[in-house]
Amino acid sequence: MPDVILNTHTFDVLFDQKTLNKLDQNGCHVYVAKCAWEKELRGVRSLAVNLLSEAAGKLRKKFHVKTVNEEYLPDQLKNELTKNGASSCDIEIATLAFERVSKSGQEVILITNDPHFQLSKLALERCRIFATNKEDF
Image 1 (tube, one colour):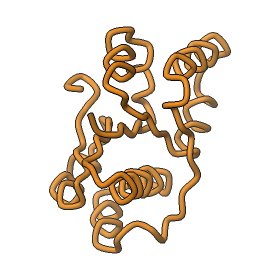
Image 2: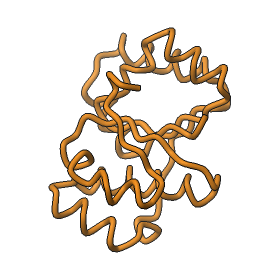
Image 3: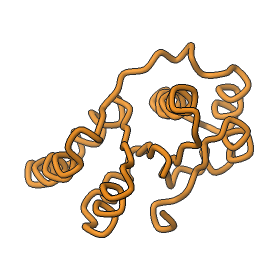
């Protein structure tokens, strides 16, 4: 199974034991852009932080919070995302997804409910990044 990138507001997929098992059994690596991780943690209470940390721990060495270099993202994709209302953190998330495609050589799944990623779906797919909402994952 391909690498999985989590967008802000999709971390609750880590609370679902079935999804966690699926990720673990398939050897998936889960990546989160550092900006999304920090943004998500600011918006939750300590109990949720503990639950997120516990869920990430279950994935052992397969959960990664990464800082990325935005210059790595192709201009065409960056322009498409920006045109559709992506924030700077969304650009970092897309950059992380593109980086994973380049390094792993395989497709990447981006779990997101944000409309600008859905509006940019064709541009993402040309880069082998497949955006799906968390309900369909």
